Length: 412
Length: 116
Image (cartoon, rainbow over all chains, first blue to last red; front, top):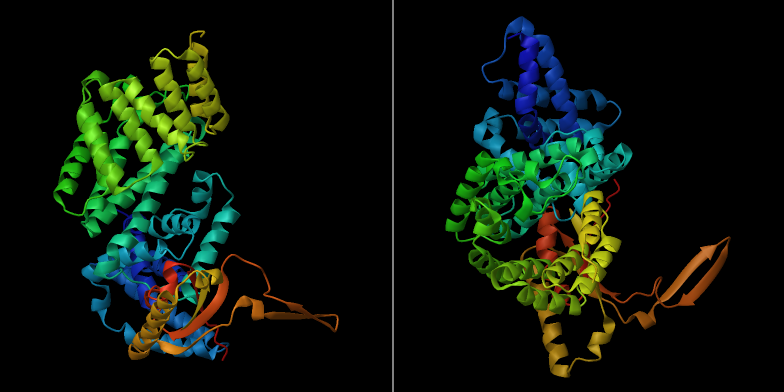
């Protein structure tokens, strides 16, 4: 391989690790990014002449650190404090064991927890994670979230400013704080996944990548931190992703789970997802992500929709409602009960939830109600609820689906 | 680094408290203050008199206006503060989450701007 190609390959494989370590050594995101770019420029110059070093990552970290300290010294002519800081950084990070393999892996986790610090807004957490941990450009992030690059850039700048000015530390939380802090991290990963997963057909290409990115993040986290919920979330994403090809028609129209062509489900992802669910369930600290993954696994293991083990799914929802009480979970449980005990039993629960007013503006609650009414032959009620759902739905594929259901409804 | 922990809470809740409840609540505050003195976080702190004692002044075009009450009427009012020394934001948040009012009101944690 040409040295230039080697640099490119090392960049793809190692740049995030190099950056994560440089942020720790240099104590600043922007300084670390500049140092990393300088290090790769140096690699392009040196590696063709001198050969690729034995440990390219360590070479890059060491070179980046040196370049950053050097740059700070040069700028110290205008800002004396920088010179002092350079001397401090040099003394504190003198030992190459500061960037050995274990330290580097810890840095990746530090970076994730810092980007997903709860003191940052969720938007900023997502943008910063995709930029710094995944290495996406601001343009790529903007495209995926249907916003402008300047908005994304601004979010990232603000987040970095807060990290610096409020002194958000670059560290993995202490053991006792991990469950709470991990919630925020997993939420960011799942948010990224869902942005990619619930995308409509037109932009599915770029947004599909987002789901892939979330799964990569999930794998990284599972490698670094073997917590049950980390494994559970990875399983959940894989099991959802396994249905991607079957869940929309070529026209972009949604296909419901019970109508999907199950031969188009991705077996490899299902096998991996189911194995991960079992692993997560053996851990004591499993929670909502693992339970949702377990439900997805029961669906995945049913050869046909009619073979679905609804009793087991209802049982899992019973646990989930206690672990993570929310009206949306109750709604899904009602749908499972309708499958196990018949539509009337499900409708009674859906009506009770809607009666509390909590899901009044949630289109899926109304379309679930409509569906149950339809199955009970209450066509006028079904029509009213489909219409209510349609008035609330925003995504095009969902609107098409509801319009189709309305058209197909027999006159009442 | 220094952080200011601003304590916001609904002042009216004092009216609904019995004397025993109010004493217990104050006791929690005294205990908290003692604890952060021992841990070395404490730099200062005070409770404020109710918001109806507040006076707001502003000067525009050389003309001073003085008005009764706080800058903005809100459901929760600034009722006190602690100035603390903390290693970083995580350390500051660890301290702030033990301020008794965190359970009923909210605590805003702001880093102090140093000018050198």
